Amino acid sequence: DPEIFNMLGASLRELGDDSGATRAFYQALRLDPDRATTLTLLGIQDALVAKYDSALRWVDSALAVDAGFYDAYVSRGFYRLLLGDTAGARADAQVARQLPSGNHLSDETLAVLIDARSGRVTPARRRLDRLMTSFAGRNTPPSPLVATLLARALHAVGDRDRALDVLERAAPRGAVLWFWLRFPGFDTIRADPRFQRVMAESRPPLTS
Image (cartoon, one colour):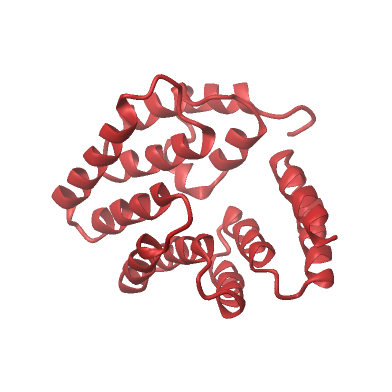
């Protein structure tokens, strides 16, 4: 069952076993070569080590077999932006926003990053304020994915302290949060003691 290998790969990546995760994803593809989810996950594995050209090829393959896959559009938008293709990134964000499925916080975060990278700081801040307002009234702490997306958006507009505030509120601490904090997008605040504390509190056992 390719789904079993998909789940295994997702678990291994969050425990720091990147090579084991990649092997599991490849096995899922051997069983189902047109599995868009697995193709996208392999792109994420490459993005983790800043191999954005390779990551882009994986999500292009995912969209070739599933032209309506939200995660692939959002992922491609992030990779295009990191490779300097702002127009392509904006186009992917717009398509993702119109799709009925998916975590639309992802495409909104991407839009903030695109505006910030393009020097459109005021529109980026307005969009970000709407995002923060939508989460401000919740009584529960942000999940690892929500926290890392909001922190990326805050940091992109220069709100470093607020970005760290959000990460400090993330729950639960653990492998999922640790995994998303590994991405190169956090490299510029990685040395901050507050960031390192969250990272240490989330680190799975047996990881270096």
